[in-house]
Length: 138
Image (cartoon, rainbow, N blue to C red; front, side, top):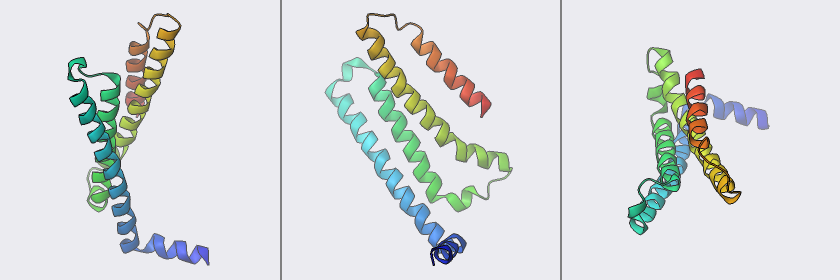
């Protein structure tokens, strides 16, 4: 039944490699889409510099690109010694993902505060502080 099927897949290096490569392709596609969006925005309005939207697309490009690479090289990553470096390589995309979506929350908070004519001065330092704490804990 289903349990036997899962055991076959779970014990098969061939199936695992196929799944890892399929995930790499999907993450790679998302990464390329983020890069294309970043380039389109930069070509349309280069005079604004690095806006929150551009940084968001850049971070999505990096996060998903690194995840794609990690899935392609998964077997090699599992051989990294000392093992703590293996954990760092596997955890960094997740931390960068956190930063990416914390940036999105910051963007929404800035819009909300500006719509209410409230000061946004404390938002960015809070964003940096929260990210620093999360990275330090990890």
